[in-house]
Length: 500
Image 1 (tube, rainbow, N blue to C red):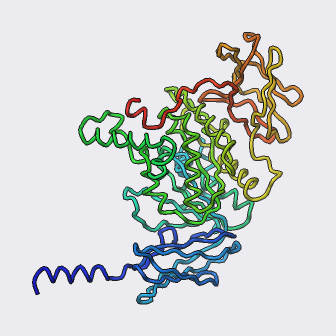
Image 2 (image 1 turned 90 degrees about the vertical axis):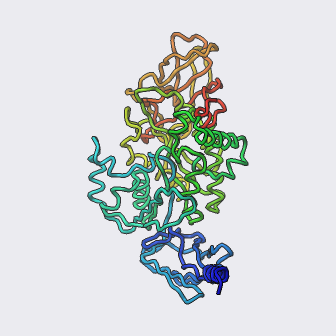
Image 3 (image 1 turned 60 degrees about the horizontal axis):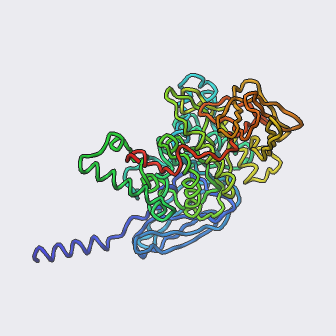
């Protein structure tokens, strides 16, 4: 037999050899499945092979397509704390895979950048970390399960994503924001709760979006063109220091391809999101509304839930040694998302910042406030106060401006610790500090220097010590009533890197 025939025979054997039956990596021991929703289960096998999945009395089958991918959908199930096996069986050789300890309850995904990613042990080992250390030491809830999607440099490469319960050794390296959110849901709902952390430090929002979406939405193609420009500059040896300093999480669609696709389309109840610092620091705040709202739309399509709840954190107060004046504009863009995109909710964290620490220690507060939104918006506690005051109307009255708010709960409070949080200006646009007082349920602001006020703003700085709350202790979001052009107007996040 000549060499060509030997090679042809070898290739034919390789092409017809059965592929190993493998559920997607997110399906591992101790997983939690979403209750009361059709549950998608998928994986790989030999093309044309029939795969059968058995769980909780259900038995579903599907044939692997030409790429070897298969997917079945389990019927909706009630919550269950009973640990059960999920069994996968192939039609070729009756190969079988079993994952054990599977529960049914509520499943959420935590996305974003470092304030979603930063683990519990980071805070417990730092100053002011005793509260979190005590939480770690006392943790032991077998019905609270956590899974972290690890960073992967290779797009499309799948691997097991370990689901774990919550003894101390497990929660130490897990997302603090995700853990506290899940813990509070467990206490409120009394069903198993699963939280999937899919986040990475320094990530821009655009890295969590697909290349197709960036290419076909608005003018986001500019971001892809800038990326190509940077790659060419690096290849040609003409790249600037800013270009060579970029990491994958600072580049478009990288983490979408290498991390998020490993979870899509797992059946989840909703998303919690903590991100925005990187977009603000690249002078791309004003367009964040367009970017973030597009991201939400894409994720809802990917997870096959067009109204999927999306709960997010407004940027906390922060005062670095070098000021960055673009955070107020990004906070405003976040407010616009909540106001315009259905089934979204935003918590305010002006009172939860650390002046010199971009990763504030307020993660217990973050998780609790996100859980309030979930309980109100998703789980039917409609009378629960879950938001701070939001500006409803501003009315000029002589030398004063009268402000009315919604989400006041039991009433408004002006706390004494805030410093010059309110500012007003006339037609000249020169804002000055204003005095604020509560009058008949309204906030009335004025300044002796402004006899004919036109506009008012509140908390329009990166570092804010808030003064305005409702009586439930939830702070008001920053706002402004002017329409002055933003300093970051129409900038996308790579513009500053390529010198635009």
